[in-house]
Every structure is written in C-alpha cells, then in structure tokens.
Length: 116
Image 1 (cartoon, rainbow, N blue to C red):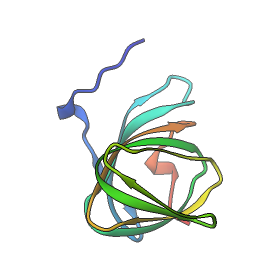
Image 2: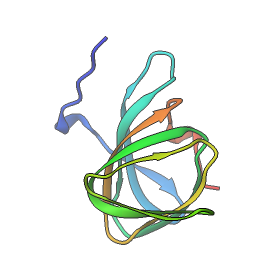
Image 3: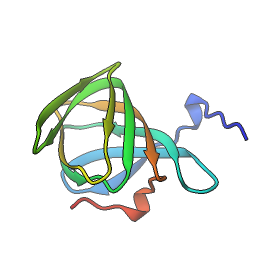
C-alpha cells in the first residue's frame, strides 16, 4: 500500500498536555500499528516533561527546540534529524515555535498518552 498526505490534509489538532501548546497529526499509521508518521507543532513557548514509551525519529522543518535529558541538552534547528529512544525521560523546551515531521515505533496515538 502507498499513502500520500497533501499539505492541506495534515489536519493538526490540539493535544492537551500541561506545559505545552502543541498540535499533532498522525495521518499515516501502519496496518499493524507498528509505525506512525505525522507532524508535531509547538506553536507557543513550551516546556514539556515527557517520557517516551516509543521510539521517535524526527526532522525539524521549522523553528527550533531543546531536548534536556540526564545526559545533557541537545539543540535541534530546522533541517536537523533527531532520534529519541524508547524509555528516555526528557524535558522539551521550545522558545518560540517548532514544527517537525515525526516517525514513531510503535504507532503513537495522542489519545493514549499524557505527560508524566
């Protein structure tokens, strides 16, 4: 099967989580729920504490963010590719705005997640 998602079909929706002003969309989810592909947009300054219970690769499309872990701080800007391994506890800090393409394994669903 082949999927295509046009820019007008991204349909980002608000995701309610303390500390962040964020919208998400996962327009592609594999039939076996083993993978999802979508978009995340932090549209206001945010500080989100989050433990990843999935693997996530992401490509920063616009803006920037910092990911704080016990190992230090990583800075990501437009064009940067990142990976966060399942089980990683983070604090994600967005000074202004960040927009990214994300790939999660297994598939991520906002309805199943809350911030820790």
